[in-house]
Amino acid sequence: MIIHGLILAAGESSRLGQPKQLVQCQGLSLLQMTENKVNQVVSRTWVVLGFQSTLCAKEIHASEVIINKDWQAGQSRSLHVGLKRAMAGADAVLVAVCDQPRIGVPHYQQMVQQAQNHPDLIIASAYQNTVGVPVIYPLAHCRALFANPEYSGAQYLRHQQSRIHPIPCESGAFDVDCPRDLESL
Image (tube, rainbow, N blue to C red; front, top):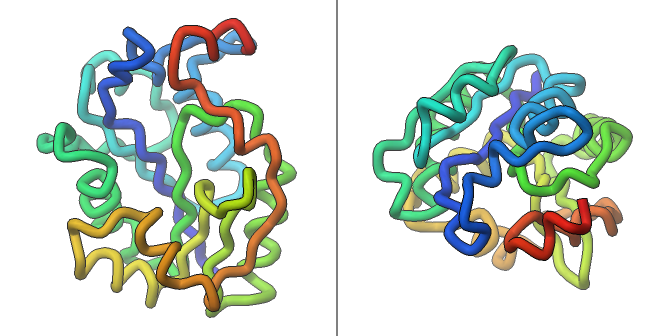
């Protein structure tokens, strides 16, 4: 099974007051940290950038950068722009965001293993009584998401409950969203 990675990192981080992609944690930016983890479990990775794309692109070392010129339209637009490239030649796409630094490589490895065991199911991280990113979409689901560019990944997941294989990931509940989250890093 060929799984490609797609990291969505185009947002402005307005609540944080600085680009979260560039926040340092354990000697790496959050973007570098996520790229390193995802690249350990997939065959190829794309990173969607938008706000401060020139600065953020300097953090990418082993992935292809996609610039979302319409990043203000939200994460659903970045997902659409990224899937256009990431699903080519793949059986599935692992979608991640760069603001969940507590998710470790073992969780990504478990997701990939479950995707191989259940190739027709969406493999989603489960935390705080919901499912979300990181998530692995089989190609058929990537196509469905791509065909509907206004549909966010979260909206899609809500309508696909019977096709989701959840993987517990309590560390996914923490994301870097506002200044107080920086203290928790």
